[in-house]
Amino acid sequence: MHPFRVAVEAEDFEAIPALLAEDVTFLSPVAFRPYQGRELVGAILRGVGRVLTDFAYVRELADADGLALVFTARIDDREVHGCDFLRLDSAGLITEFCVMLRPLSAAQAMAERMGAQFDAIKADAAARIAG
Image (cartoon, rainbow, N blue to C red):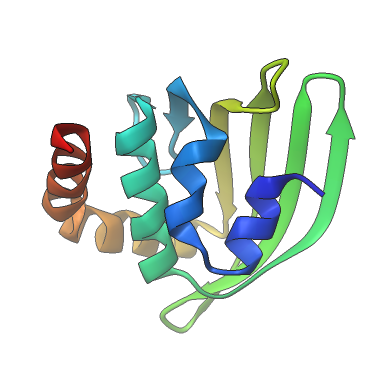
C-alpha cells in the first residue's frame, strides 16, 4: 500500500506534502487549470479532507507508472464515487495527481465547497512556503 493511501486513511493530512514531488501537478475534477507545487497541492488536499466525509478507498490498481485509488465518500447529503490517479517518480513521490468524481451533483457541491475556502487554501500554502 502506498504511503499516500496510508496517510489519507489515517486522516494524517500533514504527512501528505512529504509524499509529493516538489513540482507536483494537481488536476482537479472541478477546475479547468492544473495546480502546481507541493505546498499548494498539500493545502488543496487538506481542504478536501475538510469537505469530504466518510471517505474510504475501496480498490487500488497499480502499474509501472503509478496507482489508481477508487474511493467512496460523502459531501453534504450526496454520495460520491471517485478515483485518484497518482503518477509516481522513481523515488515513489507523486508527480501528478488527477481526481475524477461522480455524480455531477457531487462534483458541483465539491466545486462550491472548495471554492468557498480557496482563499484560505492559498493562504495556508503561502504560509508554509514562507516557513
